[in-house]
Structure formats: C-alpha cells, structure tokens
Length: 150
Image (cartoon, rainbow, N blue to C red; front, side, top):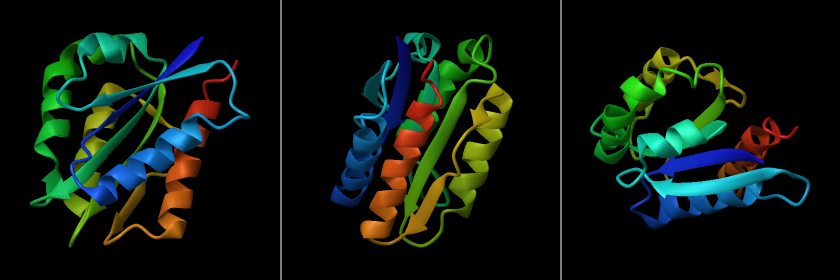
C-alpha cells in the first residue's frame, strides 16, 4: 500500500480547517490503496519521510517565512531525505495574514533541493479560509493521494 505523509503546523482554527480539508481529500472514497499518515511538523521524523511515497506539507507564513516548526522538520530530515526520495509526488499549502511570498519561495527552494515532483498547484492565500479555499485544500489532498494509486 502506498503511503501519503501529511506534515503540518496548524496551531490556529484557520490552519486546522485547511488541514481537515486536505486530509478529507486524501481520504476520499475514490482513492484506494493509499494510507494517509498525518504528523505534526515537530513530531515528524526522517523515518516518516523515508517510509512515505508522497508528501503534503502545510505551514503558516510567519514573519515572511515558513513556520519554525516546518523549518525544524526540514532541518532534521533534509540530508537523509534528499537521498532516495527524489521524484516523489508532493504539494503544499501556505496560509498567512499579510504575505506568503517568502514562505512560498522557501517551500519551492527546499522541495527543489529534495528533488520532489509537484503534482498539484500549491494552495497559498491570505485571511480566513472560505468555502473555495477549503475546496481547493480538499482537491490538493485528493490529487496528491490519487497520484500514488497503483
């Protein structure tokens, strides 16, 4: 069975709503043969990354960058994860209050360095998530999970 790893930092109700939509999409009834594993960024390990076949990463945009928790996740997993996870499918979401551009650049740079293959346009937006944002989050989770179906 394929494994999708969702790593996130979701300390606010807005981020929790986005996470719930991504997870619901990844677990859609039409998706078969994919085990969805959800980890908080501070508890995700390199073993989680190496055991997964695809990834969704979720972060807030904090002070112009990804959250410290997601940065920590990449700091502790990057070296070992960059060996053997190339070309694995992924996407991400970034939610912010005033600007997501720095966090978006960081996500692009880090995942390019890992050699991961983006299979869904990232969801990046400001303010409270509305129904359209949540639908996009659902689709993001479903798309990455579907890319792992045999």
